[in-house]
Image (cartoon, rainbow, N blue to C red):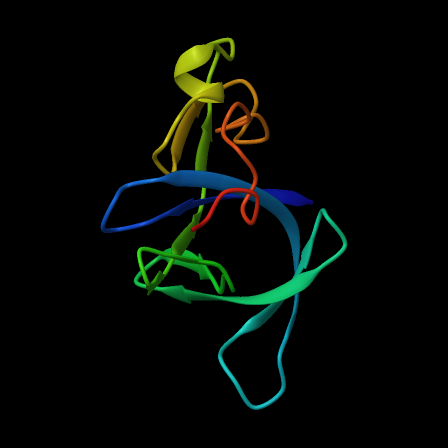
Amino acid sequence: MTHTFIARCNKCKKVARFQGVIGEQVANTNMLELSLSDGGSTKCWYYMGICYALVDEKCCGRRVDAKLVEAKVTDHNCDGSCTSAKSHKCACKCGGLNHGKDLVSVGSWWS
């Protein structure tokens, strides 16, 4: 199952998205493998009910936070409030698959 993540710089508030498949637990850690849709890989972990992903990119001299989109499937059709979303919460028919779709991909704009 493909999952959508939203990455945000906490200083300048730039936002990007990426997708990947969460896999097996990494031996002797609390992290999980994350195979990215662009062919790369990284790690993710759960903390207080939120899934965070390691992102190699930096913005404003800081590491970027990336959170798994929390999707609630509803009867609402996807529109600009979903495809241009900058938060990690989605409530429409797509179940998070189209969430932030209009944003740039991680790695294509970080300074």
